Length: 330
Image (cartoon, rainbow, N blue to C red):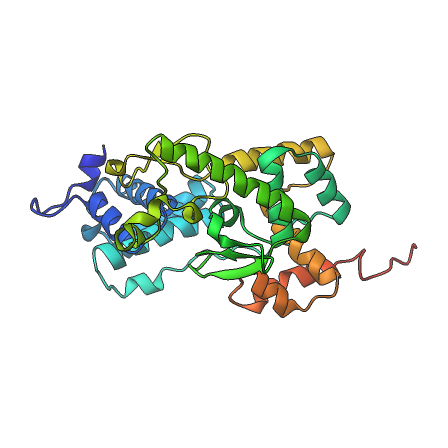
């Protein structure tokens, strides 16, 4: 099916989806973004009768987005993701600077208060976890990192001397600093040592390489086997890079679904009846810092928010009835 949808009217040009992948990789987007964008573009083309996007425009895009909302009842975030993929196709791949692109509006998600653990609930959930995933969950709560920021940590990103962690290429491709909780120092050191032993064994077995971002592997060819570049939470098995199969087997980071499942199980076992997830630890980190009296600008920097208005959502959690207001019944 992909061949028919991705065929380009001009036979001497690359197939459409191949060109989409090429541009995405040129811009150093993540493999998840690549997979998501290609999937949405295929679905858009199939929905539109397998016509080439150059033959379509605002009418077809609007019809597809309406189909997602009315027929499939997808969330606003999902619809916006589909729109991002289509806008990327027209603006970056087909290089069509059409006026109608600016007229296509994104769906606005209704404002929702974040789910937050109380300190006692966070302790119960974390107390229900064991092993590597327990350490990762404690880092989520103790640093405010997002799930993938934690999963993608490298050994060199942890600074024991200054008790800080460098979060590389977070949301918006920005780097930032956050604290390394003192209570986790020894556990993280033990994890680094486990990675050191595993990496030494990989080198003896003829492996030991890791994926490097951007063009670093070309600029510093020896860095792929340096210990500092290894993932702090490596996968148990080595695998081939789907973008670079000729590079052979590498040890990638732990699959994030392993941590997600462990956290979900811990929430159930701890008896916390909230629609919580890994991201709830980040919400709880911010809320509990504000409860402790820390300045909102400090919390903003630790979270990596571009605008303080994003961080302000946690003040709404603090000010909701039952916390700042005393009920007349009491």
